[in-house]
Length: 304
Image (cartoon, rainbow, N blue to C red; front, side, top):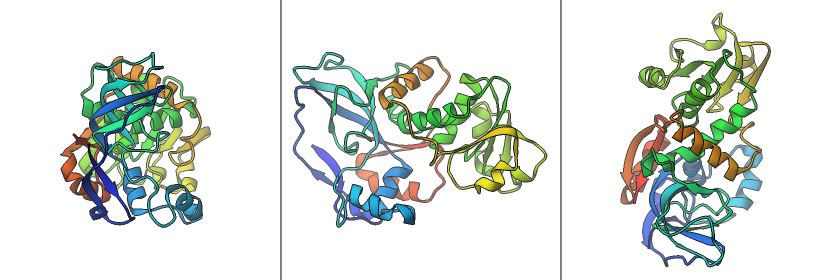
């Protein structure tokens, strides 16, 4: 099978296309023929080994001390079940699925990927393309997990900083369409119309205004990119308000259950992933270069 691998940390050019043996599912596994995957910020950071200084040693031990332990990146995907093991009962060949590879040693940048039947895999939402379904997983689940901790009530005011990214575009829609709250999105000039189109009641251009210096106060502030100083952000909270940060509040929960909840939101028409660009697998280097620039809108998809 075709796969994109990396054997050392570095710039996008460390990625290269190669041929690897096609995997065979074990008795309790599902073999998926991958139709689409994505390039996430997580993929680019793993590729270049960009981690906070305090996390250098544990990250190196997890990812690989001298070279990557897991040579195939790709944190999320969508595809078609090609074969199942003898003990699998929940999936059958021909099923369209979407999945997170985070707890299955990554591996989305390949034509085939095996998952445990009990892994983070579910039937694909019927109203999404494969590219959209692949893009829905990481940003959607992360946004759901963080926002859940805000205990958001209908009519409350919620501000989302970094509203145009993979997590932020999901968060805007979830807050508005699922929680029924008022949304203020903070993004750059180029993305104001995008965030309005997703349902934001107000947008703030961070290149022109600092939301913390304005008169408005919020019940919940969610930093979806972890780039705004927390102490300053909290100045814009109402008394008793909740501050959420994507790096600190995305833990907890059951990944499989979260994926099923995400699927329900999507099929109810409350959430639709934003796709910035699509690249074929053989242009993975160009896709990583684009994401490295830090200006993607929503998600970058890869088609196989």
